[in-house]
Amino acid sequence: MFDKILISITEKIIKDPGYSISYEDACKLSVARNNAVDLIICANKIRNRFKKNNVFTCSIINAKSGRCSEDCAFCAQSAYHKTGIETYPLSDVEKMVNNSMLMEKAGATKYSMVTSGHSLSDGEIDSIGHATEEINKKTDLSVCASLGQLTDTVAIKLKEKGVTTYHHNLETARSYFYQVCTTHEYDEDIRTIKIAKSAGLKVCSGGILGLGETWAQRVELAFFLKELAVDSIPINFLNPIPGTRMENRSLLPPMEALKCIAIFRFINPDKSITICGGREKILGDFQSWIFMAGANGVMIGNYLTTKGRSAKMDMDMIREMGLDICRGA
Image (cartoon, rainbow, N blue to C red; front, side, top):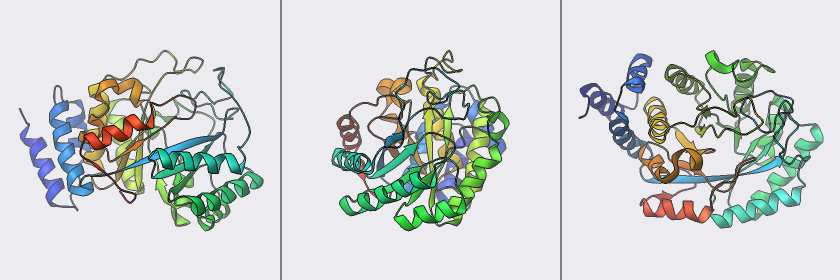
């Protein structure tokens, strides 16, 4: 049975774009027991109000793999972990461009070049810029990049070369961050987000859920992303990788993961929410529920060091849900 407070909050969000759920109410909804289905139904109404039936599909290439100097506890690419992944330097321009064309053919509307490490050298940034120009010439993809920490100069160069969106996850709430990473400060990530915005780039920033954070910390992250006014929020779910410090963490239950998506939609009603890594492992047969839970984007294809399911399966899922793939979603 629907809670009157839940119905009231949902109606306010739908009717008044200026209304914002309070931190206290978001926390109450998140910890309330046996309300996942009600939250999902209401989040779907909010998604439909702000995004209609439009969804987008993004894809990535692991353009530079491994040997990362950061100690993120979940990450297979950290030099602090022994995970047996393939490591290699920045891919050549031709490989990045050819992969983008393959992913567009598979159904992607957005394409991101992702690199491991704290940041890239000037020469590596030049290669990313060249690849971006070629991708824009040869495809209709929106080009994104996830290259670590930014400087003003690099951000402006990426914008001039045709990158539309910069991706830089906060990973988790500030209050939990140092349980996850100790090799750089949270404020450094915030600075990169602000630099990207100042350069005129759209910003894609979210995190990974299931790292051991509390519901209050999930709400904290969602509200801070709202405060930063990011354009898109990618939500990942921890898929514990052997050899990392989080290899023994339990998987989130499917309904808890869907409830997470719903809470993020309540807090950020007009933003894009993309479901990315870990969804196959966590959600299983419930993957189509991500849209009902409030998402309007999904990553297709493979992830950085783990395999995704076939892009065709995801494209079929979207069509079966009666949703429209839209580049501007």
